[in-house]
Amino acid sequence: MQDRAERKLIQTAMKAPYLALEDEQALAERWHRRQDQNALHQITISHMRLVIAMASRFRNFGLPVGDLIQEGHIGLLEAAARFDPERGVRFSTYATWWIRASMQDYVLRNWSIVRGGTSSAQKALFFNFRRLRAKLQKSMISAAELHQEAAKILGVSAADVALMDARLSGPDTSLNAPMREEGDGSADRVEFIASDDEPIDEVVEHMIDAERRSTWLNDALDVLDRRELQIIRERRLSEEGATLESLGSALGISKERVRQIETRALEKLRAALTRAHPGLQTHAI
Image 1 (cartoon, rainbow, N blue to C red):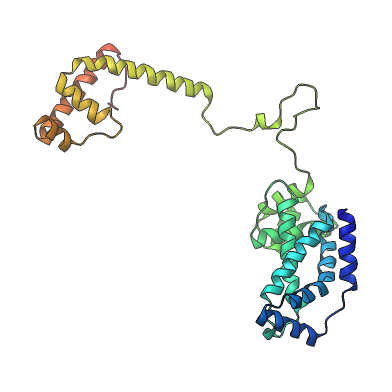
Image 2 (cartoon, rainbow, N blue to C red; image 1 turned 90 degrees about the vertical axis):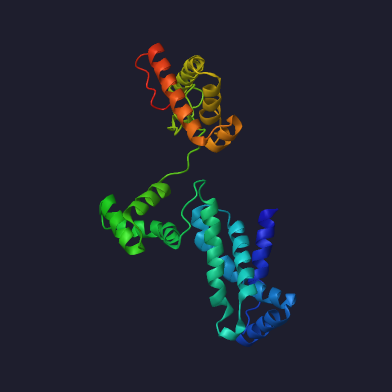
C-alpha cells in the first residue's frame, strides 16, 4: 500500500508542469500577500520533482525513500511559507536548502540509535566523511593520517573524525544482546558497563558504620544533664538546627550562655566516646 502511494506521488510530481519565472512570481505573490492555499499547492507540487531528486542522494543511508520524500516535502512547505518573492531569487534555489536540511535532520535522527552531533561542523562531518574517506583511502595512507587530513578539510578535530569513522564502520549493537551466542547462558552487554554508583559492599559498610556510630552516640548522651541534652538535640541532632537566640529565649538565658553550655556538652560527649571506644575519631561531633 505504501509503495503504491509512493509511486503515485512520484508519478504526479513528474507530470506537474514546470513554472515559468513570471508564473512562479505571481503564485508566490498570491500566497505571500493573501495566503492563497491554491497558489501554495501549485508552487509545491511543481517542485516535488526537486524533492524526489534530492531524496535519491540520501538513499545510501538505508532509510526508506518514501520517508525521505515526506521529510523533504515538509522542508518544501516550510520554504514556501517563508519565501519572499521580492528578493528576486528563484523558488527552487531557496527551497533546496530547506529540503536538504529537512532530510539531513531525518537521517541524523533515524540512521542510528545513538544520537550524533547536531552542530554544523558535526553535520558536515557525518554527511561528507564517508565520501572523503573513500577518496583519501586511495592514497594508501594510515588511519591516523586519514583522520588528520579529513579533520583539516572538514574543519573538525581529529578525535571527532576518528569517532565518526568508528560509528560509520560498524552497526549499532543492543545493550541487551548477549556477549556470546544466544542460548549459552552468557550475560547481556549492559551487565558489563561500569556503574558510577558506589560499590554495594562499600554502601553496606557505610550503613553499618553509621548505625554503630549512632548507637554509640545515643549511649554517650547519658552523660549530659537535661539542659545540655536539650541544647545538643536541638542544635546538633535536628535537621533544621535551632539558633542560639531561639534556644536562649526558650531557656530564659542569653545566647552566649547557650553557646557555653553547648561547648561544655560537646566536650563531655567526646570524652565519653573516647573512654568507651579508644581510637574513635570524634572531631566531627
